[in-house]
Length: 242
Image 1 (spheres, rainbow, N blue to C red):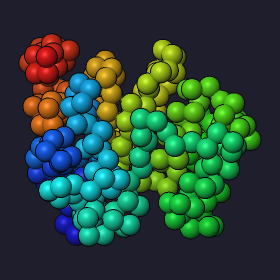
Image 2: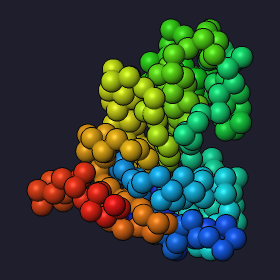
Image 3: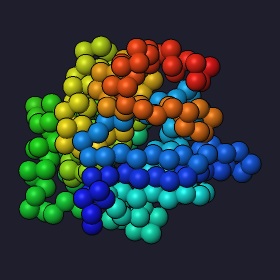
Image 4: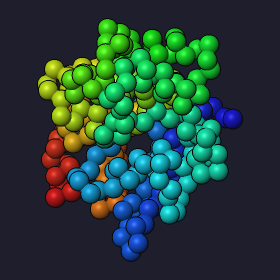
């Protein structure tokens, strides 16, 4: 495998999804390199969640191809998915389990070798600020802590790629700040796709921005390029999607 292949963690080409006569995602190209955080933006119904479901192997594309760390997601989905950590908009948490029990289940599902599971759980809890709540039932935790548990399950197996769909939805300002700091930290080690409606979040933590509208990519560039051009992200977003 070439150095270019290992540097590129996600490569999607002409990714398309039809639902009957309706095209939800239309020939989307997306590339992410190791150590990058991509802000994935768009109004409701733009096709972001459908795209992320295809990138994670939860939804088959009608057309196009996806490779994860050089592995074809369609022909070798098990190996490709082991490289991915995914936090959907509504985290699939088992509220009747403790944090430790849930993360123990997560590392088993992610095929972490048995001798390494205890350390993997401890590391994920430490990174997500959960070290003191391991024995608490998930259902008793605040919304912010439940989001942390969702992120912890996504990173417990040390994936190359993290895909986070609205990780700060419904959180208070202090919780949003904590999650932002965590995403920035994760971006130094993993590749991260961050879908959010909070534009200041993208400006604070992302290296690149990609905007979708009506199933198509209508903008893609670095946040540095935006700043250099003195373009406000909010103005750009409104002009492209209104």
